Structure formats: C-alpha cells, structure tokens
Length: 640
Image (cartoon, rainbow, N blue to C red):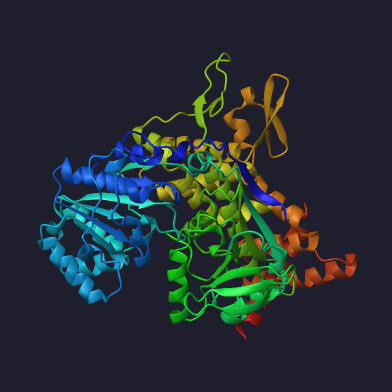
C-alpha cells in the first residue's frame, strides 16, 4: 500500500529535553504566557499539556494570588494525567498535589460528585479534578462569581462549542462575562467535525495563544523517524479486505466503524469475531484481564488481543489491564469502536488502522495521536484508512463518494499539520534569498493589521480544516474547477464566514497566506546544481522565482485529484465526477420534459449518451439531464 502522505523527521530529541525548571519545549513556551488571564494552548497528543497546566496552575496559586485551580477533563480515564506529581526534584518551585477527596474522576454517581464540587468551592482546598459533566451540573447550582480568582483549566477544549445548545460553551461564556475567572484551554486539535466554531470570534479574541505544532513535536523525538498516511479502498464488506492492511507483526489499534455508518454490517460483535478469525484461533481468554490469547495462523505465535467492543462488564476489565501496560509484550492488538482514542496512552503502538471515515477531523487527530508517541520499538508510525470504493450499482453512491472525499480531505489536512512550517515574506529585491523555513514571494501581501498577523501565526491549520471541510471546496478535488476560482472565490468565502469582522483587504492577506502555505506544504523540492526547484502540481519552479500569481494558478488540492485519478479506474472516476455534478445540477419539470426526447434522439443517432463535459452547450445540458435523472432514480430506490 502506497502512502498518500509520508513525512520524515530528524530525531533531534529536542521536544523531550527539559530546561532548568524540568519543562519540555512546549511547556516552557506555555509557561512564558503564565500571566495571561485567558490562554489557549494548542499542542499535539503526548506533548505534555497536563504538566504544562500544573506549572501554570501552581504559579497562579503561589505567585499570582489566585485561590483555586479547577481542572475539567472529558472523561474519567483522563483524570489520571493530573495525579500527584513530583516537580521539585526536576527544578520547579513546588509539587503538584491533589487531595484524594478532590479527585472527582474516580468511580461514583453524578450527584455525589456535584456535592463534592460545591464543598470544594466553599473550602480552603486549592486543586480539584473533575469531568466536563460534573462541571456542567455544578455550574447550574452556583453563582458565576464563585469562579472569581479561580483558574478553570478545560482539557480537550474542542468539546466546547459556540452553539447555543452547548452547555459547556454557555458555561464558559457566562463565567467569562460575569466573573474574574482565569481560563486555560488545552487541546490537541482546535477543529471540530462540524461547522460550528469552538468560540465566538469576540470571545476568541480575548485569548492569548500558544501553538506547538505536530511537526515540532515529532521532529524532536528520539526514535520516530517517519510517519505515513495511507488508504486502502475495498468493495463489499470491509471484513473481507481488512487482512490486506492488517500486519499482525505491528502493534496495532483497529477502530471498527460505528454500527450506524454505511461501512458497518450492523453486527459489531460478528465483525470483531471475523477479524480475530482472520488473525488466528483463540486459545483462551484470561479471566482476570479479559485479554484474548490468539494463536496466529501463519506461524503459531500467540498474540494478546484486547477486545474493547464486547459488553460493558468485560470491557471494564480490559480497560483496567490496558491502563497498566508497561512492557512491549503486554499487548499486541487492540480492537475498539468508540474507545482507545482521546487520552489513551499506548506508546508502543505502531499502526492505527481505521475502518471508514470518522466524522470529525479532531477524532482523526486523536486516533493518529495513538500511534505517534515516541518509543524504542518503532522508527515509523502509520495511519491507514480503510474506505469503501463507490460502485455504480451502489444505492448509496452519493454517501460513499462524500465519505471518500472527506477522508482524502482529512489526510491532506494531516499532511499540512505534520509538515514543517514556513515563514513567508514579500520579496522586495533580487538580493533576498530564501532559506529553510523562510521563503520570499513576489507580490505577497504582508499582514497589515494585528488581527491578520495573529490569524497567520496561530490559526492557519484551523482555517485550513474549515476550508477542507467545505462541501464546495471538496467538489473541486476532481480537478474540474479552475484553480483561480478555487483560490480567489471559494476559499475567500470560507474565510469571510469564519472571520466576519475582517475587511476585504484583510481577507485577501489571509487568503494569500493560506493558499501559499497549502501549496508549499504539498510541494516537493529538488536541488539541481546550486539551485532549488519546487514541484507544484505539474510545474517545476525555481524557489527564487515564486510569485503570488503563480501560486494562485495552482490547485492547492492537486494531490487529491492525483489520488482519485491514480487509484480509480475510468468508470469509477466518472461515477465520482457525476455524483459530485449531481449536487450542482438542477432542472425544473418543464425543461426536463422538453429536453428528454432530445436525449433519446441523441442516443439513437450516435449510439452513446450525451457528454456533460462536451464543448457543445446543447450536448452538455443533455448530459446533465442524464445525470439528474440517475440521481432522481437513486433517491427513489433508496426511499422504497
């Protein structure tokens, strides 16, 4: 299987070394902003966000006069990341301690947790750990002013939403407006799966931001040398194709599809059993841990497999076992449905194999984060997406095409996230020479306002996520839209929607940097003699000749088109294009009644159906009528 994305790293060890305070690179960067009232830390899984909170929280308590630190996590299992930690031995001025009664992520009912939260707020105790859920319920019973002079740290901040129905989002907006609370927001990915922003623009402007990129994290590891994202397309049921991408020699997490998705057979337990049958024969199941011991077909080696799909009681035993995994041989394969993503730590994992597209880009980042921990047993980490291939006879062809476009979009975004960052400057003279990480571009508009500068420095990847999730943008992946239309019409529309307060001039400045950054991160460089050339789409360009007009003539998602044209036969590619076209084609009944006899006459005369891409406008419209009728027929059959 060929990777769509392959990124190589330098194994510098930089992201794991510590300073005199015992802080890693990301933590030191966050600590520099410790005086900020509202701070948003965007850093990948395993970069040390929980300890960054400890450093900042202790400084707020000891040096800034705050009285309490409240840490809210999305689920109980993540609470262990904030347990008592020795920091003084490594150079910091205090240790992180949480009284056992103030750790509300242990077992117990919601009502008792809420009562414990309220008791904490009235006590002299300093630190509390709770779930998002407990925080929401407690919020309903206390005044906003109770959060005065408190630090509220929200882990996995992407769970917040600006939507009016988001109780966590409403809580945040309310206490920001009505108290002197300090907020520390932490997330591995700031983009959600839907189009709803996490914060309203006016609220987001309050936050100082610390961004630590995925590339910085992985490039600074000791052992991991490369990371790949690949696809495998299948027809029929995925269980008949999974053995082609499941290498049982690699420590692997398999995420099977949600039972309500098109990829699922609807029988999750049968799917797990089929996967295990492909691997080998079950010798026995350990009563204490729930781990399955499976004798591999190929060589008789016994593999330890964790089934996190099975019923609740059995699953709890398996989860408990996985929490204590310390040795390489403790587990070989984990099969999961909704678990083993956020906050789950298995550094030995080499391969994340996911069936079907995940509806949220954040979820994909979290899944990928399971295999990108640094560990002595791997130099390469791999994410593989097993995706259904559209079939002409498939009643769900539109769903399948949309799913496939979203999956490709997610991988292209991950390439952007995982690749090194560039700084772009306007070229003012031929004397200026580009260097690694800093490129001079003719005609580039540089940020004219503080707001634009902030977006370019901190929000480019989040903005790209919104752009790549846009349905109109995804329809350009087949390469049929003029790149200038994509770059100068569709992309600015998305920017304007996300940042409604930007002027036209500011939107153009942001647009140029987004398109430039996207094109350059997808480009390949080649040195010929003393000159460096960049291959962008089908062009080789001297790095010193880059100008913004040239960039605007390139489709930044050219790689998506290459995937589609390389991986699919002509009939399937045509099917994909027609499915995309069907969304934009419309006919009223009178025109359809008028044109359809002409379609039949055309077929009788030529022996072929009219081409929707023809240069002749009449034939093109007749071709569109055929696509429109096919889509109507599919819809009727699906409604039966």
